[in-house]
Image (cartoon, rainbow, N blue to C red; front, side):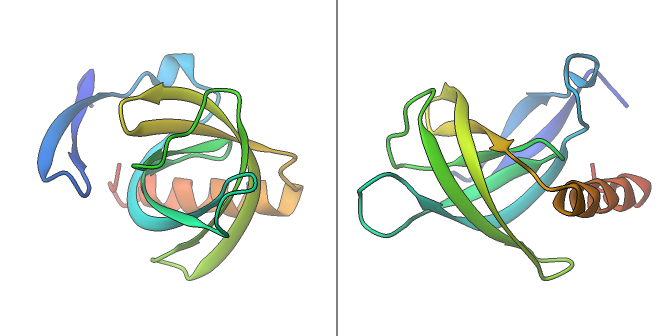
Length: 128
């Protein structure tokens, strides 16, 4: 694998350079496109975004909704390949334009194992 891989910026119609940075991360990230639902504070019940990648510890999303670093939000998504549904409390850790890095908070052992198994299988299939 090269130092960076190409990732399609879903919803924006262009490819972008995506550094893998696996040596700095606790969990491997798997590129993944899917719709996510965001529940942000007292705003309307939910807003939508698109997942860019997923790991055991978090998710990277694209959203036109303005999120603040440090903000706590809820996220819900269904992994298309497995129809597995997840709901997590998260914290916004990073922001670059419309791209946000969310860390999952208080993840159950069962959910962490499901995410790890999915990422491992996708890695074996070369979907990373």
